[in-house]
Structures are given as structure tokens and as C-alpha cells.
Amino acid sequence: MYAIVESGGFQFSVKEGDKIRTPKLNVGPKEKLVLEKVLFIGGEEPKVGTPYVPGAQVEAEVIGPGRSPKIVVFKKKKRVKYRRTRGHRQDFTELRIDRIIPSR
Image (spheres, rainbow, N blue to C red):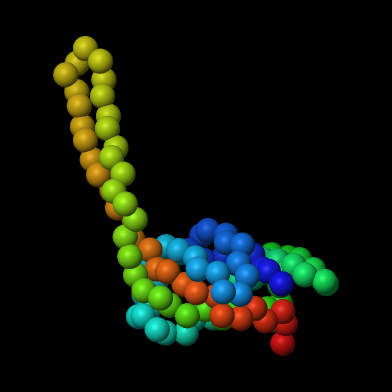
């Protein structure tokens, strides 16, 4: 069984035991988290939400926070001596999917 969940404006396809990196959430390590925005549940009897599947939940455990590798943003305009260099690192929270509950 797998599910498509929404977290932080992004959609993730998950199954039990998967690890996902969502945008930063204000939770501590080893905490349990329930994702209630389930868009789709696949398996023998697929369920499609409009937009969410009523009563469906995905239980996850927080592994911990982290930061993605740095990306470099470089801007340049020719013949004007205009150059700007910026760096960016995105914060994330890593989750381990424990259980997918189709409906209650």
C-alpha cells in the first residue's frame, strides 16, 4: 500500500518504511507526527480524494532536522560590470513513515 500526502506545499509518494525530507516543521526529534492531508491511497482498493481522502492518515516519526547542500546563485550582465553571487541552503525535516491508515 502506498499514499500520496501533502506537507509544506509539496506532494510526496510514500509507503511504510520510507524516509522523506519535507520543508522545515516545528517538531523535535523522535516525536510522532500525523499527516492528515492524504490525496490518494493506492493498493487493492485505490481511494482518490477530492482533494483529500476523508479519514485517511499517515503516521510518521521525526528523524531530525537538517540542511540541504549549498547552491550558488550567480547573476551577471555583460558589458556593465554587474556581478552578484549569493548562496542558499534549504532547511528540512526528515520523516520516517510508520503506518498508512486508509480510513477510520
